[in-house]
Image (cartoon, rainbow over all chains, first blue to last red; front, side, top):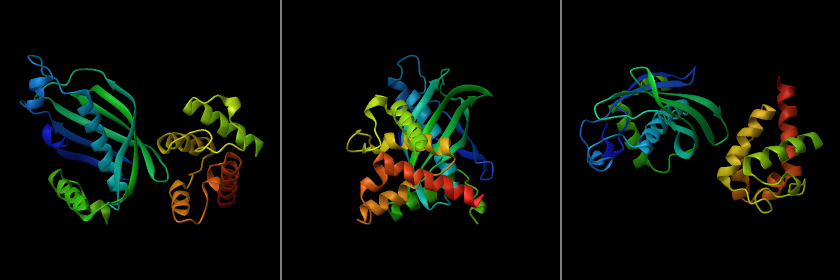
Length: 155
Length: 95
């Protein structure tokens, strides 16, 4: 994870396009400027970043299902719950599954776990559109390589 | 149609917190009820689930943007319900 660059996912552990599920892993950094303010003397990962982590996890699943032809963007977050603190150095396992695939939008359920215990979950809505420009597509390709996106599933 | 309308009106009332008695078959979802595109995603989700269909929102939006259709054709509720009935019938015919 590099919190300030919004690189919140380290690696994809499992991506199943038939079951429409994904599991990823991410290690919360031991130090970050974000922890200097959130909170001084008591660093915890901000809930909004846990939501973003779940959104990015869901986003990779949607990218896979749409074969990188369209880009999902966060549209709504419902039932987001922060069930326990996430602290520097912890290893997160993040899971997402498709709830519904609509026309131009999709809904997922996502969970953040630490050592098998649920720390956060949310129902997330995305709108998706064709990639707006080649630069964004190139960036997503580069991130896909970094996090071990299984390119073979696209063929 | 009336049954479809009742379901759709209930969905809209519950999803957007709009008084049920203000929703009529002639209501325009956008112009009269003030439903925006994000709220309409929630409505589309509820309609998709309730009727087992997939509202072709992207196609409709494209047709409106291209000037091939008017918003009234898809977003006045009696017309929306007619489209839903067509989609349900097409699904039944294809099953």
